[in-house]
Image (cartoon, rainbow, N blue to C red; front, side):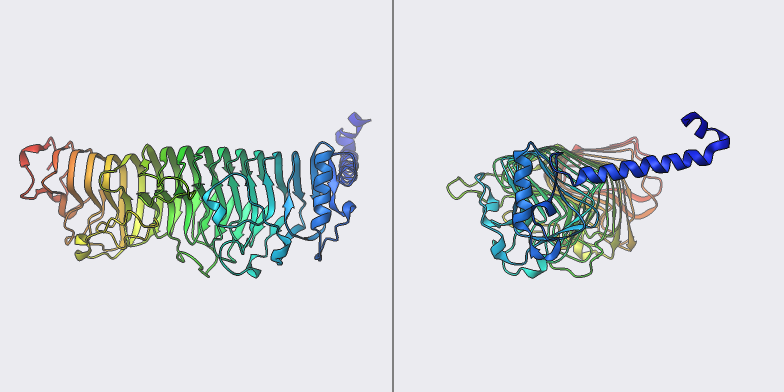
Length: 543
C-alpha cells in the first residue's frame, strides 16, 4: 500500500498519509508531555496557576522534588506565566520552558530565602539570593524556547538587596540551552566552581538594574559556551576567578555580544587565574539599548583581559573576532590591586599574564583613546602575539597628546578607559616582554597626529608586516622608548611624510631593522642622542 501511495499516480495520497503520521506523532508527544511516570512532570499537575499573579513557587518546587525522587526528567512549564520566588534545582532535573511559557521572578524580596553556599569566594559579599539556585548537585539543566524574566527593575539598593536570576555552585554536568533571559535584578547567571558546563543558544537582554552582567563563569572547568546572543548594560560574557580555583578549559564560540561595559571579559576578579581558554568566531557590536547605567553608550571594551588579584593567566587564544563601533576593541592589563577573597588570607602578590595569542580581528569605529597593553614596573606582561589585526579608529588625536605622562595606577580597578587618551592612537605597550605584532594594519577616520605604535620598557619585540596611517605632524609612526632586543622586518609602509621609526631612551639597544621597503617613507629612522647607535642595526632595507 505504501509503495502504491508513493507512485506518481498516487502522490497526493502519499502527502495525505504523511499528514496523518505527523499529526499522530504530535498527538502522542503531547500526551507524553503531560503524563506522569514518563520523566515529564507538568507543574499544572502540582497546583501551578500560570496566570502571572499567583505565586507558583511551591507548585514548581514540588514538581522538581518529585522529579528527582523518581529518577529525574523534565519539569515542564507551558502555556502561561509562572510567578515564583527561589527554586532549588535537584539531581537529574531539567527545568523546561516551552515556547509561550515565562518564569517571572517575584518582586517581593521576602520570596528569596538567604542561600549562602558552602564554597567560599569573594561573591559572598555580593548577594545571597537567587531565583534559580543549585548547589552540589549533578545533571541539571534549563532548556526550552520559553523565557525567564527576573523583573529586576522592581529591586533597589546595593549588595544583597537584589537576587541573581540563576546561581549554580559546585555542580557537575550543567546544561542551559535555548531559553531567553531578561531583566535580572543583579547578574543574570553565576556559575561558581562547577565542572562540565554547557551553555548553548540562549538569548540575554539585561538592561534594568545595576550589575546587569550577561553571564559569569567563575572558577569553572570544562566549559562550552556557543551560539549565544547577549546585550547587557554591565559586562557581557565574563570569566572570573573569585576564589583560589582557576577558570580552566573553556571554549567560547559563535556568539554575538553587546555591552555598555566589556562585551568579552576575563577578570577583573582573577584570584585563581585563567588557563587554557579559547575564544573564536564572535561578533561584538554596540548595545541596542540607549540608556546607560554603567559604562558608555559604545561600550568600554570589546575584549578585555585583566589580571589584578594575583593568579596566572596563560594559554589564551582569541581568533576570528569582528568588532564594530566599540570604544576600545582590545584591552590587556596586568595590575596589582591584590584584593583578598577571604579576610583571613594573606594579601595576594602580583599575578602573571602570559601566553596570549590574538589573531584575525577586524575592528571599525574604534574610539580616539588608543589601546593599552600594560604590565607594571618589574612585572611585565609576557608572550603576547597579535596577528592579522585590522583596526580603524575615529582619530582626532593631537601631537601634544603624544607626550602625555601616563600614570601607572597599578592598584586601581582596571578598565580600558582608566588611563584616558594614550600617546599612541593605535597601541601603547608598556612594561612588556616577548611581544609580537605581525600583519597589523591601523588607520583612522579623522587625521590623528599621534604615533600608531608606542613601546615603553619593552624587551624582545618583533614587528613584521606592519603598516598604518600617519600625518606630517606625527612624531613617528613607531616610537621605541627604552626598548631592547627588537626585530622590525618585512614592513612595507604606505606613503608617509613622517619618520617611520623613532628610537629613544638610554636603555634602548640591540634593535635590528632589516628587509623593509622604505621607498615611500620620507625618513625611515631617527635615533635620539641618548641611544648608543652602535647597538642599532639597520641594513638590507629598500630606500
